[in-house]
Image 1 (cartoon, rainbow, N blue to C red):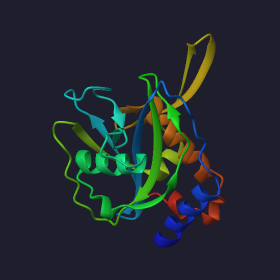
Image 2 (image 1 turned 180 degrees about the horizontal axis):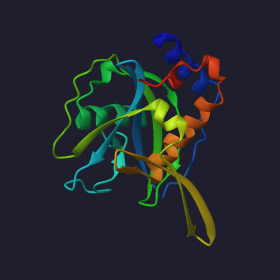
Image 3 (image 1 turned 90 degrees about the horizontal axis):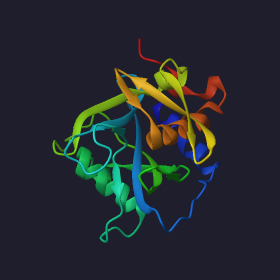
Image 4 (image 1 turned 180 degrees about the vertical axis):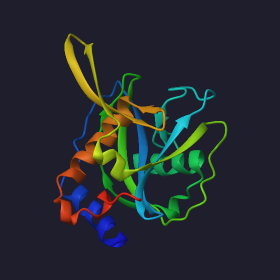
Length: 201
């Protein structure tokens, strides 16, 4: 069952090519959405950023960051940052595909990648960058119990974006946009074929 779900994630991503944004004024960044089977349910790895980081202090985020000169690609960036922040080694990540680029209000252009790891896995969060590790059940996100809609005026037009609440933590902004797109793709699959919708009881 587990392998078929991971195979299905890969298929869904391959059949929905990412939408690429081009904006030289934005700083390129890569993030990694890790989804994996743990204790009978699928989870997504997120973290709460510490107050010591340069940007987005205290916010919920995927492991990731800006591209460095040592990175050949933004996938390299996402894998390097996932290792630096969460202690997940690049060779332990099976990359499943990509999601749409996202521009942030802080002038980053994020390229999101989706990957999986074998579980159990010993995460080694970087205390300087990560305040809290969050392993969010995928089924709980799909059920939509913690979904909120953010509405505000931006550049002269009404902007409506989703946000999520998990154990008192608000997932919003670019992280919520990436998460929302992933959930949208998964929700396109018929119920009987979606093993990841099973919630642990």
